[in-house]
Length: 202
Image (cartoon, rainbow, N blue to C red; front, side, top):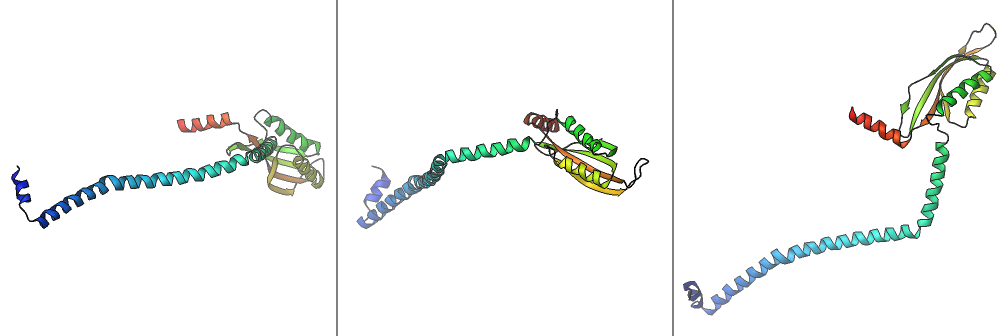
C-alpha cells in the first residue's frame, strides 16, 4: 500500500473526515467552475436568443397580418414615385425640353440675348441642369413667359432673377432679365453605377 495512504489511514477519524470533506469540496468546486457555470452562461445566452426570436416572431406575425395593407401602401408609393419621375426628363428628352423653353420665350415676344446651358450637377438619382438666360421684353411678356414655364409638364425652376431697365431699337419700355432656369434630369440606376465605378477608378 502507498505510504501516503497508510499515513492518512492512521490519522484520527475526525482528521480523515476533514480530508474527505476537503476532497469533496474541491471536486464540487471544480464541477461548478468547469461544468455548471459554463452551462449556466450558455443557458442564459440561449434564453436571450429565444426572447429575441420570440420578439422577432411577433413582429413578423404583425407584418404578415398587415401584408395586404403594406402591399397597397407600397403600390401607392410606387405610383407616386413614377408620377414624380415623369416630371424629370431623361437624357433623350432633355434637348427637347430646353428647346421648348427657348420657344416659350420667343412665343411670348421676348428677345433671347443669352441661352447657355450650364454644367450638370448630379444629386443622386437626378441631376440639376441649369440654363443661363438673358431676355429682353416688356413686363407683361416676361410675366407670361414665367407663367408658361410654370405650366410645363416638366419641372423647371427659375432662380437668380435680376430685372433691369433694358434698351431695344424696336421697342420701348423693355426690361433686361437675367435668370437661371434649372430643370432636373433623371439618372437611371445603370448610369449611377457607372458613375460610381468611374469615381473609384480615379
